[in-house]
Structures are given as structure tokens and as C-alpha cells.
Length: 171
Ligand code: GNR
Ligand code: NI
Image (cartoon, rainbow, N blue to C red; front, side, top):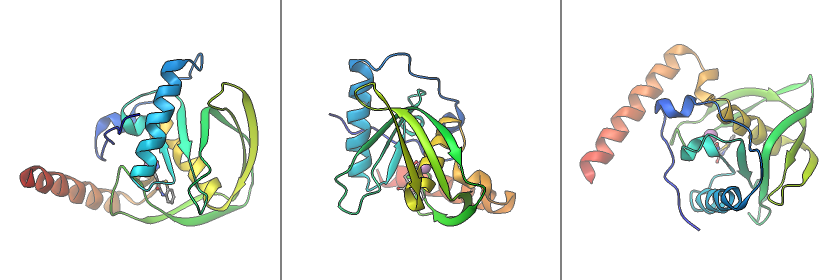
């Protein structure tokens, strides 16, 4: 297992479109395990491979209270989405300290491959539905701040660059 460094917005690599996994082999299982460790260590509810600079369609999530229900989504697809939308406060490990409202489908049905390479489906609502949509956006190169106004996005960009400079100085 290994802790992986997480890319920070506005890193241009966050806008890379991930490609499908052809086969769930040992290398993919290693990536999944490293991503799970990184997600738990960072107290995130989800992590997309894009965020650790691996541009394959791989997501890990755990939206359980006890943080003991890891989910692995390889080549995820939304097979059903509700017309009903909801707006929740989102954050992102790639945009630390920033939280804002994003509209999402209230309910989704997801099909994906698990860590064992077998296809499975599940219905999600609430935080799990939000998280699936947030993570699938990452795989398309999209960060949640892109749903905000250009003015807010510019302010966030400036704040993140300043924060990165200060962290650099402190090292
Ligand atoms: O940890 C996370 N929390 C969160 C809260 C509300 C909506 C989405 C998320 S995902 C985020 C982890 C992350 O950045 N995943 O890409
Ligand atoms: Ni994120």
C-alpha cells in the first residue's frame, strides 16, 4: 500500500479525460488499494484516479458513517438518473478549504466493475449519489468549481495558488 499525492486545483492535469480499464489486473488492484488508503488517510468520502494523476476510469468511495464500507467503481456508468435535482454543499480533496453548492441528480443507478472485475449495480441517493456524480466528473476532467460562476472560480484559483506558494515557502 502507498499514500499517493493528490493533485491540487488549478493543476491542468485535473482536466485530463480518463480512459476505460481494459482488464482488472494486479496493477489495477494495486491502484485501487493505494487509492483507498489515500482516501481514508485524507478523510475523503471518495477519490477518483484523476486526482492521483492516473488517467483510468477508477473510483473509490466510502460514504458510510463508520467508514468501513469501501466501494470500488471501475468503468462506472450511470444507467438511470432522476429528473429531480438536489443541491448540496460539495468539497474536494483537490480544492481544499473550498465548499460550495452544486446541483446534482437526486438519485442515480450506477453500473461498474468491482475490485474483483465483476460487474454490479447499485442505486444511490443523498451523499452517495452526489459523490458518484462528483467522482465521475473527475474522470471526465471536470472539477466541481466549474459549476460555480467565473468570478468565484477566479477567486478560488487565486486562493489556491497563494496557498500553494505559502506551503512551498514553509517547506
Ligand atoms: O471528501 C469529499 N467530500 C465530498 C463532500 C461533498 C460532495 C463531494 C465530496 S467528494 C470529496 C472527496 C473528493 O474530492 N473526491 O473527488
Ligand atoms: Ni473531488
